[in-house]
Length: 365
Ligand SMILES: Cc1ncc(COP(=O)(O)O)c(C=O)c1O
Image (cartoon, rainbow, N blue to C red; front, side, top):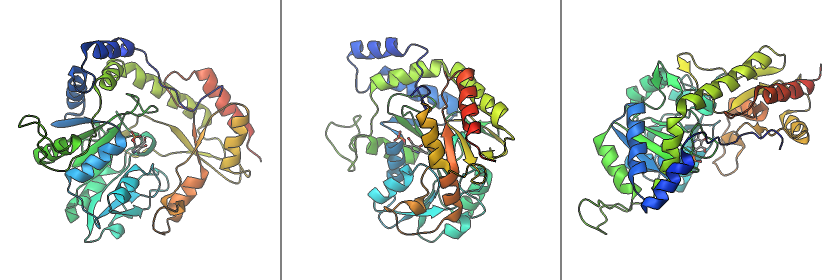
């Protein structure tokens, strides 16, 4: 593709630090891992940071930490990347899919109460595309029912809500460092909490239920292996050193798209929630079918033919056959009409202009 949808950018000491990690012979645990966790502790101002193998195991660990059991219900948005829903199924939990706000495409606080039952054991707002859900409203409802909130921040690292880092409000928050994300370690992630008890449990589950401080090969609970490696953490440490430039370039990219496409007939940007300063992970637009009568999927195909790679919105949960049948018309409208455009820090303004020009050409009046 002439213009890919995403591309990782390595502008710092990634190669140097990975080499150092390999040469140190500490390739599983090690100093880079400790540094990555400490750095994020300072950034997020949270007491406990656990680096893990990816954003999905981060969610799995959060569920295990909360002691969720088969039959428990967890509320997840019906439009989002389905990691939390899928981990739920794998653990025998019941994902209860909720409507999202028609404009912000994030879990709707207004609709939330109707999905809560006596079996609800967690609410998982997913901060989609870099937006942040209306956390004040969600927390008010969750607290009234005494239900813990797990924030899925895989797509919203460094976005801010009311001036604070995203992922600092819920009981637990999870992050992803997968290849396309704001910073990457190839695959990787974080689980974050202020709770000593939750941290203690998640620490055990992360590594076979063993407490190395006590004795080797003694399993206190049936844990898993969700660990990140030291040489992956080395990439993360190097990326964090360049975070100012990464965020500035992401901001340039999203502002450039906004400058060109805002107020264009047939195109609606995802609305950013009030009180949010977003770090846009992926520029996402809703196409009006009157102006793009060929439909979103055909638009993706037409752009592909000129070597511009885009992505469709996530499939709404109600369209996916692996989940129990349910109906979420609001999520389906978003799902069928959203297109996400190339978004990465080194994307040039000329390329953005070209993508926009080509997209606008596909409109039919
Ligand atoms: C919202 C969301 N949650 C969780 C994940 C899973 O993260 P990972 O790919 O690191 O397992 C992703 C995607 O990667 C995501 O977009």
